[in-house]
Amino acid sequence: LWSHQYARTANRVLQPLYFTVSFGLRYLGGFFDVRYTVVLHESHARHGKQGFPHYNDSARTSQSIFTWHPHSALTVMPFTLFQPSEVFGRDVFVGVARPLYFIPILREILMVGNCRIADDDVLDKILESGRSLLIQPGGVHEQINFRDDHEIAYFSGNLGFLRKAVKYGISVVPSYSFGENQLYKYRPDRIKISAFLSRLGLPTPAASGLFGLPALLNPYSGKPKLIVGAAIDTKCHAQDGDEDMAVCHVFEAYLAALRSIWHSHHHHLPAAVANKGLRFVYRAGGEQGDVLSDEAADDQKLVAAFANRCQARRAAEDAGKSGPASLNMEGKAAKQA
Picture (tube, rainbow, N blue to C red):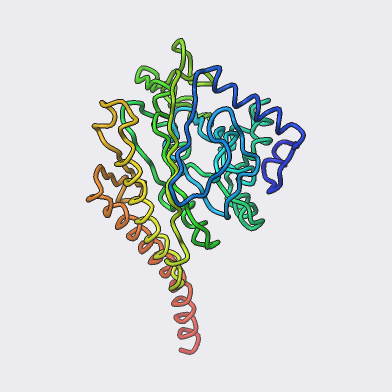
C-alpha cells in the first residue's frame, strides 16, 4: 500500500538511498557488459564528464516531455538516467506500467529512480509541479510485440504524450536507443505462453536473454547508443486553441524528427536490421485499424489517420449532445400540441 502511494506522488522519495542505488545500477550495466553512450543533439548544452561510470549530479534542463524508442523486451533505457547528460537529470520522472509496482525490490528501485505509475492523473500531477517526464510512447503493446530483427515504433490512438505536451505548453524531446532491441532475442516459439501471461495482466514478450532464460535482468552484452534529438516546440502549434489540430502538427514534426535520427545513426545497428528500415505503427483503432509507414513519404498517412480519428470522435460527441436536445424539443412540442 505504501509503495503504491509513493508511486503516485510528484515528489522524490527515499532520497538517502539514491546514491547507493544509482551507484549499483550503473555498475550493474557493466556487470552484464551493457554500456550506454548518450549522444546529445548540438542544441542541448552540456558540461562535465560524460558516459559510464561518471554521473553529473548537476544535470538540469527546462521542463519537457522526453521520449525514447524502442521499448524492447525489457526496457533498460530508463536506468541511463543514472548516467550523466544535460538532458536527463534527477528532476525527470519516468512513467512506468502499474504491474511493475507489484514486484518487491524492483518497485523500491523504481521509486528511488523517480519512476511513477503512468496514470493520467499522476502524469498531470507531475507536470503541474513543474517537473519533466520521460515516457515510452509504445508502452506495453510495443513490449509484447517485441522483435530484435526489425525496428518498429508504435503509437497509441490518442497520442496522450503529445496531448500532455500541448496542454502544458512544453517541448517534446525524442530519442532513439540503437541496440536496445538487440539486448534480447525474439522467440517465436514462446508466443503462446507470452499471450497467456499477458492476458493475466503480466506483460510478457516472446523473448529470452542470456542462457535462453525469460527476458529479465539477463540481457546479452551490447553497447547501445541513445541518440537524443532536438526539442520540438509545441507552443507554436497551439496558438489557434484547437488541441486536436495542435497535436496533429506536433505528431507530424515528431515523426520527422525520429526519421532524421534514424537516417543519421541507423548504421549503429546490425546491417540486416538497419536495411529493413524503421517502421511506424499508429494504432488508430476502429475501422482504420493499424496504419503502417516504412518511409518518410508515407508518414503522412499516420497523421491523416489521427486527424480522421479526432473528427470521428468530435462527430460522435456532437451527436450525443444534439440527441438529448432534440428529444427535449420534441417533448415540448408534444406538450404544446
